[in-house]
Image 1 (cartoon, rainbow, N blue to C red):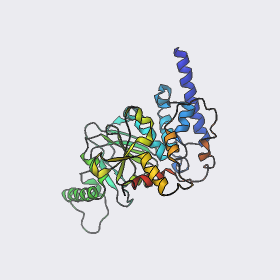
Image 2: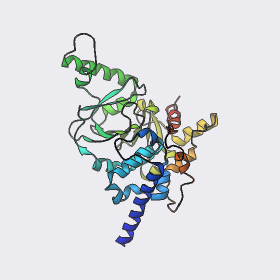
Image 3: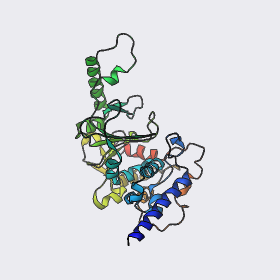
Image 4: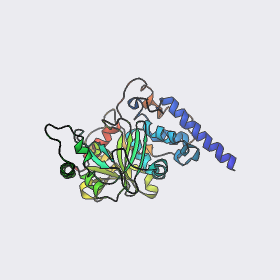
Amino acid sequence: MSSTIEYIQLLQLEQIYDIFHLFHTPLGPHDDWRYYSGLVHVGLFMKLAGVFWKNPMILDRDEMILGVLQLLKKSSVMMLLPHLKEWFHSSATPGESAKGYVEFNSPDIMDSAAFRTCGIGSFKREEGNVCFYTVNGLYRGFLREKHIPRHGPRPSNEECRQLQALRNSEQKAKYPVLRLVDDAEPQSWWIVGLGDQIYQEYWFLVNFEKRIFWHTRLRDVICVWSDGDGIWSPELWGLVEAASGLEPHKAIGEVLNEMENGGSIDGDGESEEDISKEAEGNNHSESSVNDDGDDGDESYGEFIPDPSDFFFDVFSKAFK
């Protein structure tokens, strides 16, 4: 029996490697993330490799999960992250970032927030273009303001703390999601960075306990995934105004239906059915990638924007 299980696990491992080779995903720190991110639906991995994140042969090879995350579309990252809570804790190590804080771009890229990534219970992982950190609220120290170039005398440490406190207040008033993070239990939010650290197109905020996912394109809206069996039905997940807490909410499927009734999805978008299918993986007998692989066939050597941005922009307008 054990040999049969090990054989199936080995087949899953080989399928993941085959998908990597098909889409030329980068597994090294010097590969250009732009040519590989946002190419694949998570449904492709699940059809060919099942619930691969439960396979110990894959979990023991951290680069496998990292490679999958880097290859997925943003909407597929949203689908997969709820299943990776234990992996994040096991793959990260206790500790803090070098500066004790990490800057995270707000919806206005010129107005980044600084999160405190230190304190009791903090975790981190830094590897190439990938980084994970647990968050201990907004940063309240002096270092960030100290490093900002200024004309005239440099402010004292205490003055820098006051400037940082003022910046935090202004940003929390402007971006409600920052209030959620700042008021949460320490280390309950994670920064998940999957690529470029300047534009941060593949950076996310995740709270596994509250089941919240956020990307800057969602602006003032957060996504709350369902628990239990509902985790497999993303069209039923809730979209919530960050300023209102966790109620009231609209289901993703409801928002997409409203959009379709008001207009058509453009050629770069996907339908509600496509989003739902990304989380389906019950048919693991597929032997080809014709249905799902065409998104990445022409990606080698040219940068193709992730069409998930279209959906996140739609979600951000769910309550307008």
